[in-house]
Image (cartoon, rainbow, N blue to C red; front, side, top):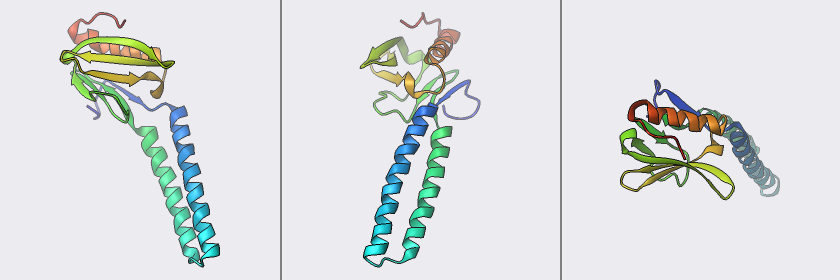
Length: 154
């Protein structure tokens, strides 16, 4: 589902990537400060500080690359897939398994909830996705309508 050739793919929103990268930078900054203090106070070799800085730079670059390119939602011909979302419910399903789709607001946040025929659900917080939430909902609706004649999202 998360391979090339999938008709629609949605990545993490840029503000969220920036926020997560900021948290990582702050955490690594504290780690570097602790290592620097250990170098000064406990006579830890100075190379330990150099290693800590190099590891921090590599970690930030890798995290930014992964977060910026990571696909959160993929809508394909046969179904959908969701990853990197805690509490999503069912992460993958075929369109044939979808019984209903609804747009809802919980705690002030907009969500799309796909209910499967067996009663399980997939919950997607649309604020996590790059682009306008209405565009995602419209695209999801088009995928549902394309092969299975679903009605509009409530």
